[in-house]
Image 1 (cartoon, helix red, strand yellow):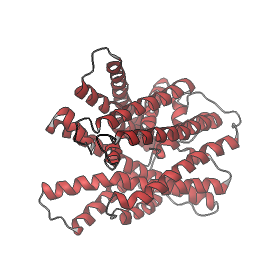
Image 2 (tube, one colour; image 1 turned 45 degrees about the vertical axis):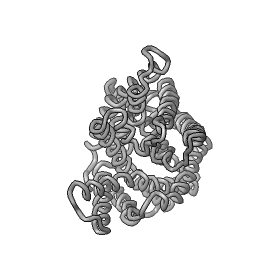
Image 3 (cartoon, helix red, strand yellow; image 1 turned 120 degrees about the vertical axis):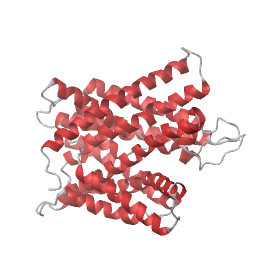
Image 4 (cartoon, helix red, strand yellow; image 1 turned 90 degrees about the vertical axis):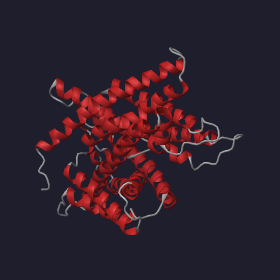
Length: 398
């Protein structure tokens, strides 16, 4: 759950301001926990059948064809979006590590660091399955906890900066509004574990007496408490110390103690390597299935080799073209994460359980749907604008 999105939370706070920022953070925490509960419940609502994939649930709720067309494209956008953002994050953190460890070195362009980061994936993408990644996942979990803690502890240690300001950065009203929208996307991006919930729950054994939703729900609650402990201190302390001059990645704002910041950036790199693979697996799976079933390719190791390398190269290329961490987060966060995280589970719940009109469940779902749809429409606009503004002064492939 705790992704690299947590690093942009102080920046999102600086674009939202104190009141709205705290409200949006807490609201998102509650809504995503609620939709997660719905997904855990719906996993086995048909006796004797389990929905192991997000799109199987979609097909049950909306019908065979429609379910597939609603869920699969969104999942693909989420997974590819994360992979692109993680290319940029990995590259930026490597660059920061290099610059922190060695001040006097010649500065190397970000482009090359993204290539260095991608080179790892050209190898790792050929690991066979989820189980071979469980070690990576554990490492990633430990890393994300560590760098979140370093981020807020180092900020707190640094203390409130001189003449810190909490106003909005943008000079014009329109700028403020668009930044606000983009920041909503940043927050949505941070809460994004819903795409793999079904796959995770599918690995828990289940009997009619002891359904899998028991242990799964306990796991979710623990995960969410940890998420809260990671997200809230980073967002609030980071913003409190730096005000609106905070960078879009909090670890770039921090300078001293050198060894600690260098370590935190290395943790981010290791974590993002693991996460990249977890999100890329389902994409590989889909591409290969389509190529074998629809286009009649022979399933072979050559096919796998080509498909996976082309995909890694594609995400690398897009990452090098638009290396704007915050703009990408806002864009993908709203465009792809809002639906799958905030309102698709609610719509399925309404379609399947049909709660009574104006009952509590009915209201709760509709509030989430409205909030989610607003997110989906507004934040990509803000994110795109911030990408365009960054791109104006940026020399492509310099």
